Amino acid sequence: AETHFLYWEVVTKEFTRNCGSVNITTVNGMYPGPVVNITEGDTVVVNVTNMQEYPVTIHWHGIFQFMTNWADGPAHFTQCSLKTGNSQIYEFIVSGQSGTFFWHAHNNWLRATMFGAFIVHPRDPPPNYGVEVAGEFSMISGEWFDTQPNDVEMGYLYRPIPVDTSKTANTLNGLTGPLYNCTPDDVPETQVFRVQNGSTYLLRLTNAGLNNNHWFTVANHTLTVVSVDGNYVKPFATDAVLIAPGQTTDVLLTANQTIGSYYGGVGLAQIPQVGPPLEAREALAIIEYEGAPADFPLSTPPFPAPSDPMVVDDYTAKVLGYTDMDLPETMDHNLVYVVGIALVDCIPSEPCTSTQKLAGTVQNFTFDEPQNSSVLEAYFYNISGVYETGFPELPPEFIDFTGRPSPEYGIGSRATLVKELEFNQTVELVLQNVNAAVMLDHPFHLHGHDFYVVGRNYGNFNQTTDPATFNLRDPPRFNTISVHSGGWVALRFRANNPGVWLLHCHFERHKTWGMEAAFITKNGTQLNETLPGPKHPLPPCI
Ligand code: C2O
Ligand code: CU
Image 1 (tube, helix red, strand yellow):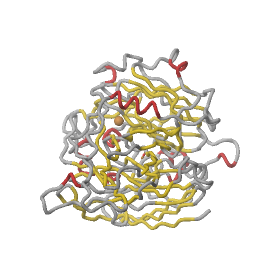
Image 2 (cartoon, rainbow, N blue to C red):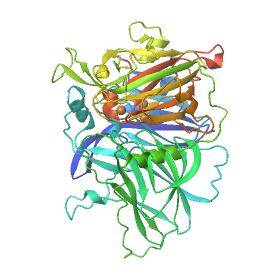
Image 3 (tube, rainbow, N blue to C red):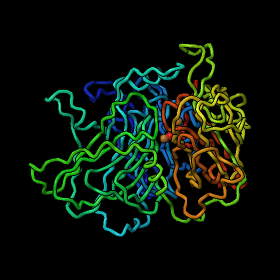
Image 4 (cartoon, helix red, strand yellow):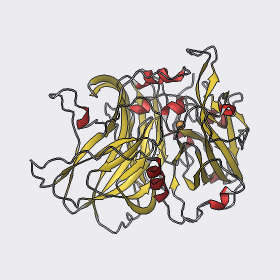
């Protein structure tokens, strides 16, 4: 196994997209940021120096951070943000997992421009897909804001009704593609992926966008899904791949059409989802066959993508895993968390435009992020007054969660409450979507673990009857799952990673509004079940 030493300078750089220039926060002046390419078992040491105005942290999305919780990165949870002029070293080993992941900033809205692919090649021979893979491409989608994203955040944060000051565009590998031309002379760059006729390629797809689900599709070609969130799935063919923010999907593409050039890329998936007024044009790249005649007409863009919720359900139902002995069968905890959007009372120190502001809630609590210590530092060093334990296992009230609106969940309250787990306990976590104000799906991400998705349905979760419908045979294993509007999902995982693990909606506006919760997994009895102290100094909190 190798050790990869990376030196990342966080710097401001001007980029022009969507007909305008913005000073954005970047790693090493790159947008998107550098691709990390490693092999399972390798060690990664990233020395981050913050050379611009905004405090920053970096998260390695989907990487377990087994025994290295300190390197996980979410601001307020495992560290305080790195301030201007300071450095921090993240060091961790990636083992027991391989596939497509990504890294991104994990404070404020900086991940809009600070993100990149994190690819872990399997140490054992790569899987046999039944076809030879000639090459691979990473395609990471995102959203471009015409204003500094941290300013966009402020338009959302302190208002009962969000104000969007920013026009936005979709991006693929940081480019908006040909549909965003401003003037005839201003042709934006379009990325070209070159393929050979008859060969098969692995496309590593990631949705690093902040607030929108994406469909990925390539004109005239069928895609075969082989992996999601770094876990192999039973291969299936599809015309379009649905990817929520925080999810990754690997697909195979065989260049088996007429030798030519074809558009491929991402378009918005409304499932349904009320997002900011994103310019709904697609971010396109070109798949060009070697030997394509120069005058070969480009395919028409393969959009609009499907918008019917049934298509989404059908897609989701096709994603199945392999039978796996890791699946917890008896549960130490049966948790039901209600997630939704509500209003919360403002406190005097906040620049609210009214007496209330929008809040994301879990169990009707909006997470109040501690400012003077991270949760992990408070836990590890026994600092009292930072958080409290006893996060409720069940909703305050079982109502009809699918009605709209649900006034019982219309007003949230603030708390810094966590749920404690004993080492190695098994957890079933049902996330029930409550439509307190609007119908929205919520892509939930759990740090430090993969979970099995054993159940999913519309309506109200019924603790007595629904478990009988669970798929305990071949549930898929993810780190991010879309909790669809008017329904629930049931997840299972084992708390085998000591530390503080964030659970949150990966739509940035919902996370900003406090749709966050956390687990603290205590140490086991053995030395190798005990979280050691930080390997490198953490950024000071004050
Ligand atoms: Cu993609 Cu909390 O992270
Ligand atoms: Cu959400």
